[in-house]
Length: 265
Image 1 (tube, one colour):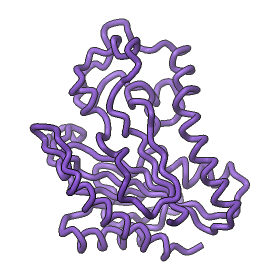
Image 2: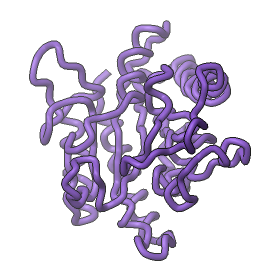
Image 3: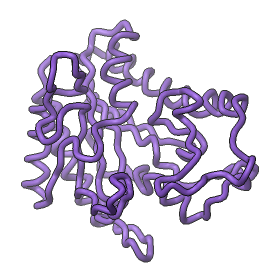
Image 4: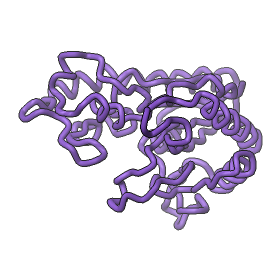
């Protein structure tokens, strides 16, 4: 294993708290769809020393958004449907409580992982924010079939490079390109770079905010992986294909190890 941290901020697919669940207007299947199902299944990622899984649904508290009332809490799902029943949305006091209960503990665990790895003498730490998306996704408002797999680093499309000195990237584009080429060759699929998704809050937070806030020697790198859910789940039955999931994860695992070894400190 390597000083690689895998984060699955949207892996919780249910709203377990019944008192909260009753306030949502969405059906169970719609709540499931508004998550990253099965990303908590990380058995085949043997490269990572730390794996952090969400225990809250993104509609309750989105762990891949800034901890602010107007960002970490959604009023609608991916398809524009109203999430809450009329007048049942969270108050500011409830939002503050949910941030304390879910957002800060999740990110504090990641911080502690970084501190332990830095104290152990590792010179570079790689953070992977792991997601999936459905195939026919309305984010472009055109019902375009989503790419097979998307790699993101906050950089430019296709290359992952910076288009100006002011633009921030979470890992140099050449490493994203190398990861893309390895996975494409191994799986025979098309991998996109910064297409549809450019990298979320956690990638920015890990690679730039923590770098400034923590007194550590290790260099911090981050990337986001977003794979098409239709690869591993039957879109009609909703059943998971564990063999397909294993093939995908083992390929990513090998490629991530290779990228980590090539990172310059």
